Length: 420
Ligand SMILES: Cc1cc2nc3c(=O)[nH]c(=O)nc-3n(C[C@H](O)[C@H](O)[C@H](O)COP(=O)(O)OP(=O)(O)OC[C@H]3O[C@@H](n4cnc5c(N)ncnc54)[C@H](O)[C@@H]3O)c2cc1C
Image (cartoon, rainbow, N blue to C red; front, side):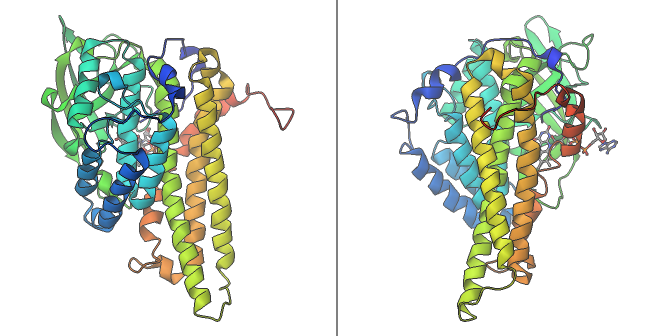
């Protein structure tokens, strides 16, 4: 998905399209089309459906079809897209909130929604008036298309800033054949947004981002997805064979898209899903402790302290996410600040911190619930939340991120004051 090897010399300034103007516009009076209504109530409708089917999605390792039917009915897939193209011009904060709510109901639904929004944001912010990309965004909104992401390739794992397969060009047509070892919901998506080497003679780090719709590609099955958690993301491997028009390539080099949009949007939306999972586990632990106290004359069980610990790490996690979101919103229009060493390490480390805190919170919730939490069944089970959240530190290995940041961390200024 994203590479965290921050190579600051790659970060060159480009312009960021639309969201700058929209960012401060707020959530007012922009909802259009069928399913209109305030975003919160539309999200709550999806949350109810996602929650009702979460256990089946997990146990059958199947795509959350019911939740996405409701997401489409509520027209939540195009909310980030500007109104001029049929969307709602929602802010990142609004999208992050949707991710947090969905994460509480069904981790797989939340993560799929988050990955779709990351790809949508890349197109919205870096399309620079491209007719081909605007056509895709219009269709996304009108037909509620779901976009998947392909960055993992061959055996290179999460080294997102490196691609093997090149885009081949013939006049104004392009083609791409890529061994995409993990594409979440690839079989269920209406389009795939993929990294690729810019040309056959380009370096692996000289990449572009390309948007293909379903009619542009075929997927040949490579490997399945029978995992501990996040089973409903159906993140199978495929050989992607795609053709399209040259204007489906985003006009900016991927290095800029990566630093300015991909990393911040991914870390904040994924983080919100993981925070949602942690919140759901904490809520179960609270219900369990209350239940146990009611059945022992108000006496709190010894593991109640673990619930307090879960509450505490959840608060830290929410605080970190909120402050990183604020920082990003502040620099979205400030190109110098956006690519500063300080901002880039902060937004990169947000993923490490938030994923570890989410795992710690769910682990404490499990201990608070004891055997009732350890069970796969029952109203206090933490099993699904634990299995889902364990993917967070692995989804781009935190160790990879930390070791890639090692050298640049030496240059990061250490704040002298608490108010810096
Ligand atoms: C829930 C979930 C959803 C995901 N969805 C997507 C998606 O939609 N699209 C996408 O592109 N990616 C997706 N990924 C994959 C993700 O982006 C990373 O590629 C993946 O987490 C691996 O990260 P990593 O390379 O940092 O770590 P690791 O897997 O720990 O790999 C580290 C390194 O070990 C080596 N290595 C790993 N496996 C092998 C092997 N079998 N043989 C030889 N060497 C190996 C490689 O050098 C690799 O770079 C998803 C991952 C998860 C957990």
